[in-house]
Image 1 (cartoon, rainbow, N blue to C red):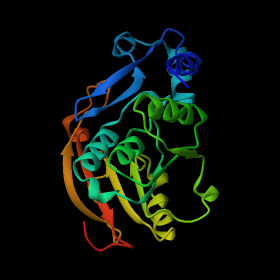
Image 2: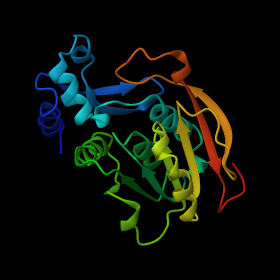
Image 3: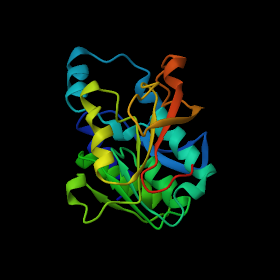
Length: 222
């Protein structure tokens, strides 16, 4: 899997877009195949907007929460070292790749979007790490030691994921730029990290302050 395949995927949504290898400011160890920022500088017509909304290519952005959680794992490798880690809603695979670089024994990147799974494989190869992919939690043979997820709570309809993760009897580590408080024990906020989405979407600073939450079901230390 390489950038040429990802370019074919993005051209179904944006025919003139280009995917390029992009270093991450918060994670200098890591680069991702992302949409060229120049492709985001022009206005989009109404037909293009409808196509983008119908098939949003989340995988070609490194969202602020993903970059923040990847940064956290790379700077706190004990969180994943020697563990089986599942990255839920993996998107570009940034957090899964960071977990692998930080010493996880096994990393599983889970995403329902086939194009995202392609991007995850390509980005893993780009960063010379090994991981495997799946589409849903239903395919897991046994629960992972740790579930990690970034920016999966943006839609209120997704809040049920919080309880779904707990049914796996795994520790959970979340990052979210939209949700500033989670009132559901045993989730608790452990820190905030400032990060931006790449390419930069000029989001309000409120969305650049990423909250990290932990639910300790197996281990009782952070």
